[in-house]
Image (cartoon, rainbow, N blue to C red; front, side, top):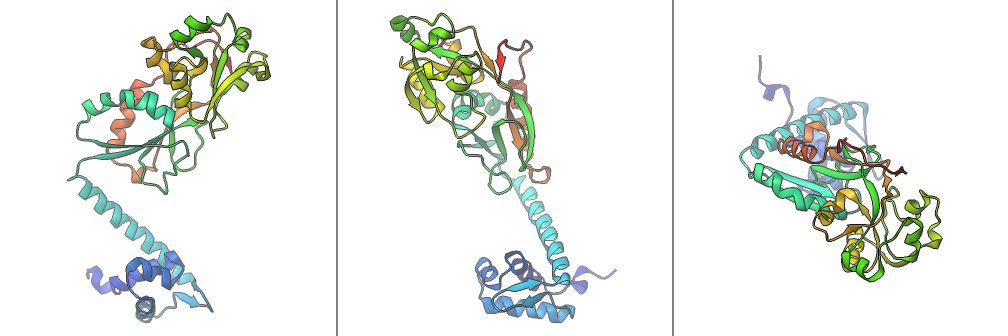
Length: 311
Protein backbone atom coordinates (compact mmCIF):
# COMPACT_ATOMS: atom_id res chain seq x y z
CA UNK A 1 0.00 0.00 0.00
CA UNK A 2 1.31 3.45 -0.87
CA UNK A 3 1.85 5.93 1.94
CA UNK A 4 -0.54 8.76 2.74
CA UNK A 5 1.90 11.30 1.30
CA UNK A 6 1.18 10.08 -2.22
CA UNK A 7 -2.58 10.17 -1.63
CA UNK A 8 -2.80 13.61 -0.06
CA UNK A 9 -2.18 17.11 -1.39
CA UNK A 10 0.06 19.54 0.45
CA UNK A 11 -0.63 19.47 4.20
CA UNK A 12 0.07 23.20 4.32
CA UNK A 13 -2.66 23.89 1.79
CA UNK A 14 -5.07 21.61 3.68
CA UNK A 15 -4.43 23.41 6.99
CA UNK A 16 -4.86 26.80 5.33
CA UNK A 17 -8.09 25.61 3.66
CA UNK A 18 -9.46 24.36 7.00
CA UNK A 19 -8.89 27.76 8.61
CA UNK A 20 -10.48 29.61 5.69
CA UNK A 21 -13.49 27.28 5.71
CA UNK A 22 -13.93 27.56 9.49
CA UNK A 23 -13.77 31.36 9.44
CA UNK A 24 -15.61 31.79 6.15
CA UNK A 25 -12.98 34.37 5.28
CA UNK A 26 -9.51 34.42 3.76
CA UNK A 27 -8.69 37.55 5.77
CA UNK A 28 -9.62 36.06 9.16
CA UNK A 29 -7.82 32.83 8.31
CA UNK A 30 -4.71 34.85 7.45
CA UNK A 31 -4.92 36.58 10.84
CA UNK A 32 -5.12 33.25 12.67
CA UNK A 33 -2.26 31.68 10.71
CA UNK A 34 0.00 34.73 10.75
CA UNK A 35 0.29 35.00 6.97
CA UNK A 36 -1.09 37.39 4.38
CA UNK A 37 -4.54 37.18 2.82
CA UNK A 38 -2.85 36.74 -0.57
CA UNK A 39 -0.92 33.72 0.75
CA UNK A 40 -4.14 32.12 1.94
CA UNK A 41 -5.71 32.71 -1.45
CA UNK A 42 -2.69 31.15 -3.23
CA UNK A 43 -2.71 28.06 -1.00
CA UNK A 44 -6.45 27.51 -1.54
CA UNK A 45 -6.07 28.00 -5.29
CA UNK A 46 -3.18 25.52 -5.39
CA UNK A 47 -5.29 22.98 -3.50
CA UNK A 48 -8.19 23.44 -5.91
CA UNK A 49 -5.83 22.91 -8.88
CA UNK A 50 -4.39 19.76 -7.29
CA UNK A 51 -7.86 18.34 -6.62
CA UNK A 52 -9.34 19.61 -9.93
CA UNK A 53 -12.25 20.82 -7.78
CA UNK A 54 -13.62 24.23 -6.82
CA UNK A 55 -13.79 24.46 -3.02
CA UNK A 56 -15.08 28.04 -2.63
CA UNK A 57 -17.37 30.29 -4.62
CA UNK A 58 -15.77 33.72 -4.70
CA UNK A 59 -18.56 36.24 -4.17
CA UNK A 60 -18.31 40.04 -4.24
CA UNK A 61 -17.20 40.52 -0.62
CA UNK A 62 -17.29 37.00 0.76
CA UNK A 63 -16.59 33.35 0.04
CA UNK A 64 -18.91 30.36 0.20
CA UNK A 65 -18.08 26.66 0.38
CA UNK A 66 -19.16 24.42 -2.48
CA UNK A 67 -20.58 20.95 -1.80
CA UNK A 68 -17.11 19.46 -2.23
CA UNK A 69 -15.67 22.16 0.00
CA UNK A 70 -18.19 21.34 2.73
CA UNK A 71 -17.21 17.66 2.63
CA UNK A 72 -13.49 18.41 2.79
CA UNK A 73 -13.97 21.03 5.53
CA UNK A 74 -15.88 18.56 7.73
CA UNK A 75 -13.24 15.87 7.24
CA UNK A 76 -10.37 18.26 7.97
CA UNK A 77 -12.03 19.62 11.13
CA UNK A 78 -12.56 16.09 12.46
CA UNK A 79 -9.07 14.92 11.51
CA UNK A 80 -7.26 17.95 12.95
CA UNK A 81 -9.43 17.80 16.06
CA UNK A 82 -8.47 14.16 16.58
CA UNK A 83 -4.76 14.93 16.10
CA UNK A 84 -4.97 17.90 18.50
CA UNK A 85 -6.73 15.82 21.21
CA UNK A 86 -4.22 12.99 20.81
CA UNK A 87 -1.26 15.36 21.06
CA UNK A 88 -2.79 16.95 24.16
CA UNK A 89 -3.48 13.57 25.74
CA UNK A 90 0.00 12.15 25.23
CA UNK A 91 1.74 15.36 26.30
CA UNK A 92 -0.54 15.77 29.33
CA UNK A 93 0.68 12.42 30.66
CA UNK A 94 4.10 13.92 31.23
CA UNK A 95 2.68 16.97 33.02
CA UNK A 96 1.09 17.26 36.45
CA UNK A 97 -2.65 16.61 36.19
CA UNK A 98 -4.65 19.83 36.29
CA UNK A 99 -8.34 20.47 36.90
CA UNK A 100 -10.23 23.71 36.46
CA UNK A 101 -13.38 23.75 38.59
CA UNK A 102 -16.15 26.34 38.38
CA UNK A 103 -18.50 26.97 41.31
CA UNK A 104 -20.72 29.73 42.65
CA UNK A 105 -19.33 32.14 45.22
CA UNK A 106 -21.42 30.60 48.01
CA UNK A 107 -20.68 26.95 47.16
CA UNK A 108 -16.98 27.62 46.69
CA UNK A 109 -16.68 29.59 49.93
CA UNK A 110 -18.82 27.51 52.25
CA UNK A 111 -18.50 23.96 50.88
CA UNK A 112 -15.76 23.43 48.31
CA UNK A 113 -12.84 25.27 49.91
CA UNK A 114 -13.50 23.97 53.44
CA UNK A 115 -13.48 20.38 52.10
CA UNK A 116 -10.98 20.49 49.24
CA UNK A 117 -8.04 19.52 51.46
CA UNK A 118 -9.49 15.99 51.63
CA UNK A 119 -9.27 15.69 47.85
CA UNK A 120 -5.78 17.18 47.77
CA UNK A 121 -4.49 14.70 50.38
CA UNK A 122 -5.65 11.73 48.32
CA UNK A 123 -4.66 13.31 44.97
CA UNK A 124 -1.44 15.24 45.70
CA UNK A 125 -0.36 15.27 42.03
CA UNK A 126 -3.48 17.07 40.80
CA UNK A 127 -3.11 20.83 40.39
CA UNK A 128 -6.39 22.64 41.04
CA UNK A 129 -7.71 25.94 39.73
CA UNK A 130 -11.02 27.06 41.24
CA UNK A 131 -12.98 29.62 39.23
CA UNK A 132 -15.51 31.32 41.50
CA UNK A 133 -18.35 33.00 39.62
CA UNK A 134 -22.11 33.27 39.93
CA UNK A 135 -22.59 33.46 36.17
CA UNK A 136 -22.89 30.10 34.39
CA UNK A 137 -19.69 29.07 32.63
CA UNK A 138 -20.09 27.37 29.23
CA UNK A 139 -18.07 24.14 29.28
CA UNK A 140 -17.98 23.95 25.48
CA UNK A 141 -16.39 27.38 25.08
CA UNK A 142 -14.40 27.95 28.27
CA UNK A 143 -11.33 26.24 29.69
CA UNK A 144 -13.24 24.63 32.57
CA UNK A 145 -13.27 20.89 33.26
CA UNK A 146 -15.97 20.65 35.94
CA UNK A 147 -18.82 22.98 36.89
CA UNK A 148 -20.78 22.69 40.13
CA UNK A 149 -24.23 24.16 39.63
CA UNK A 150 -27.58 24.49 41.37
CA UNK A 151 -30.69 23.93 39.27
CA UNK A 152 -32.81 21.28 37.57
CA UNK A 153 -29.91 19.43 35.92
CA UNK A 154 -30.82 20.39 32.36
CA UNK A 155 -27.80 22.09 30.81
CA UNK A 156 -26.81 21.66 27.14
CA UNK A 157 -23.04 21.98 27.57
CA UNK A 158 -22.25 18.83 29.55
CA UNK A 159 -23.37 15.79 31.50
CA UNK A 160 -25.05 16.64 34.84
CA UNK A 161 -24.65 14.27 37.80
CA UNK A 162 -26.79 14.97 40.86
CA UNK A 163 -25.03 15.58 44.16
CA UNK A 164 -27.69 16.61 46.66
CA UNK A 165 -30.74 18.76 47.31
CA UNK A 166 -30.92 21.08 50.30
CA UNK A 167 -33.20 22.42 53.00
CA UNK A 168 -33.42 26.00 54.18
CA UNK A 169 -34.16 27.42 57.63
CA UNK A 170 -33.51 30.65 59.58
CA UNK A 171 -30.20 31.05 61.43
CA UNK A 172 -28.51 33.82 63.38
CA UNK A 173 -25.54 34.37 65.66
CA UNK A 174 -25.56 33.60 69.41
CA UNK A 175 -24.94 37.31 70.00
CA UNK A 176 -28.11 38.25 68.14
CA UNK A 177 -30.17 35.89 70.30
CA UNK A 178 -28.66 37.33 73.46
CA UNK A 179 -29.71 40.82 72.40
CA UNK A 180 -33.05 40.17 70.69
CA UNK A 181 -34.18 36.74 71.83
CA UNK A 182 -35.00 33.78 69.58
CA UNK A 183 -38.08 33.68 67.33
CA UNK A 184 -40.85 31.45 68.74
CA UNK A 185 -42.28 30.44 65.35
CA UNK A 186 -42.47 31.48 61.70
CA UNK A 187 -44.91 34.30 62.49
CA UNK A 188 -42.55 35.63 65.16
CA UNK A 189 -39.83 36.10 62.53
CA UNK A 190 -41.70 39.16 61.27
CA UNK A 191 -40.64 41.16 64.34
CA UNK A 192 -36.94 40.33 63.92
CA UNK A 193 -34.25 41.98 61.82
CA UNK A 194 -34.02 39.88 58.67
CA UNK A 195 -31.09 39.77 56.24
CA UNK A 196 -31.89 39.14 52.58
CA UNK A 197 -29.57 38.03 49.80
CA UNK A 198 -30.19 38.44 46.11
CA UNK A 199 -29.16 36.14 43.28
CA UNK A 200 -29.38 36.19 39.46
CA UNK A 201 -30.47 32.53 39.70
CA UNK A 202 -34.29 32.29 39.39
CA UNK A 203 -34.13 29.03 41.38
CA UNK A 204 -32.75 30.81 44.45
CA UNK A 205 -35.00 30.79 47.53
CA UNK A 206 -35.32 34.08 49.41
CA UNK A 207 -37.57 35.32 52.20
CA UNK A 208 -40.47 35.82 49.76
CA UNK A 209 -40.57 32.15 48.82
CA UNK A 210 -39.67 30.85 52.28
CA UNK A 211 -42.37 32.80 54.16
CA UNK A 212 -44.85 32.10 51.39
CA UNK A 213 -44.34 28.36 51.86
CA UNK A 214 -45.92 28.76 55.32
CA UNK A 215 -48.69 31.10 54.22
CA UNK A 216 -47.11 34.39 55.27
CA UNK A 217 -46.50 37.44 53.12
CA UNK A 218 -42.98 38.81 52.97
CA UNK A 219 -44.56 42.27 53.14
CA UNK A 220 -44.79 41.69 56.88
CA UNK A 221 -41.05 41.00 57.15
CA UNK A 222 -38.66 43.52 58.65
CA UNK A 223 -35.80 43.21 56.17
CA UNK A 224 -33.19 45.55 57.57
CA UNK A 225 -30.25 44.53 55.38
CA UNK A 226 -30.03 43.25 51.80
CA UNK A 227 -26.86 41.87 50.15
CA UNK A 228 -26.05 41.02 46.55
CA UNK A 229 -24.14 37.89 47.56
CA UNK A 230 -25.14 35.10 49.92
CA UNK A 231 -21.64 35.12 51.42
CA UNK A 232 -22.12 38.75 52.48
CA UNK A 233 -25.48 37.96 54.05
CA UNK A 234 -23.94 35.11 56.08
CA UNK A 235 -21.08 37.33 57.27
CA UNK A 236 -23.60 39.97 58.32
CA UNK A 237 -25.46 37.33 60.33
CA UNK A 238 -22.20 36.22 61.95
CA UNK A 239 -21.70 39.81 63.09
CA UNK A 240 -25.12 39.84 64.76
CA UNK A 241 -26.95 41.97 62.18
CA UNK A 242 -30.02 39.74 62.06
CA UNK A 243 -31.58 36.46 60.93
CA UNK A 244 -30.65 34.98 57.56
CA UNK A 245 -31.85 31.94 55.63
CA UNK A 246 -29.34 29.13 56.07
CA UNK A 247 -28.90 26.55 53.33
CA UNK A 248 -28.02 23.49 55.40
CA UNK A 249 -25.32 22.17 53.06
CA UNK A 250 -23.59 25.55 53.02
CA UNK A 251 -23.82 26.51 56.70
CA UNK A 252 -23.30 23.08 58.29
CA UNK A 253 -19.77 23.92 59.49
CA UNK A 254 -20.94 27.22 60.99
CA UNK A 255 -23.73 25.39 62.82
CA UNK A 256 -21.36 22.67 63.98
CA UNK A 257 -19.01 25.23 65.53
CA UNK A 258 -21.90 27.23 67.07
CA UNK A 259 -21.06 30.32 65.04
CA UNK A 260 -24.62 30.28 63.77
CA UNK A 261 -27.68 28.82 65.48
CA UNK A 262 -30.82 27.49 63.90
CA UNK A 263 -33.78 29.44 65.30
CA UNK A 264 -36.84 27.68 63.87
CA UNK A 265 -37.90 24.07 63.53
CA UNK A 266 -39.57 24.80 60.20
CA UNK A 267 -37.60 24.31 57.00
CA UNK A 268 -38.17 24.39 53.27
CA UNK A 269 -36.81 21.64 51.03
CA UNK A 270 -35.52 22.64 47.61
CA UNK A 271 -37.00 21.01 44.52
CA UNK A 272 -33.80 21.64 42.62
CA UNK A 273 -30.39 20.26 43.56
CA UNK A 274 -26.65 20.73 43.24
CA UNK A 275 -25.04 18.96 40.29
CA UNK A 276 -21.57 18.27 38.98
CA UNK A 277 -21.52 19.06 35.26
CA UNK A 278 -18.78 17.44 33.16
CA UNK A 279 -17.47 18.26 29.71
CA UNK A 280 -18.50 15.83 26.94
CA UNK A 281 -16.61 12.53 27.32
CA UNK A 282 -13.92 12.95 24.58
CA UNK A 283 -12.68 16.17 26.22
CA UNK A 284 -12.44 14.92 29.82
CA UNK A 285 -9.13 14.69 31.63
CA UNK A 286 -8.33 11.51 33.60
CA UNK A 287 -8.31 13.47 36.89
CA UNK A 288 -12.01 14.29 36.40
CA UNK A 289 -12.99 10.78 37.45
CA UNK A 290 -10.96 11.09 40.67
CA UNK A 291 -12.66 14.38 41.54
CA UNK A 292 -16.09 13.00 40.70
CA UNK A 293 -15.59 9.95 42.93
CA UNK A 294 -14.39 12.19 45.76
CA UNK A 295 -17.20 14.74 45.65
CA UNK A 296 -19.91 12.10 45.29
CA UNK A 297 -18.59 10.22 48.30
CA UNK A 298 -18.68 13.36 50.41
CA UNK A 299 -22.02 14.81 49.32
CA UNK A 300 -24.42 11.87 49.25
CA UNK A 301 -28.00 12.46 50.33
CA UNK A 302 -28.47 11.85 54.03
CA UNK A 303 -30.25 8.64 54.97
CA UNK A 304 -33.08 10.55 56.68
CA UNK A 305 -34.55 13.28 54.54
CA UNK A 306 -35.23 16.48 56.48
CA UNK A 307 -38.83 17.37 57.20
CA UNK A 308 -40.35 20.52 55.83
CA UNK A 309 -42.22 22.16 52.97
CA UNK A 310 -40.91 21.72 49.46
CA UNK A 311 -40.78 24.58 46.99
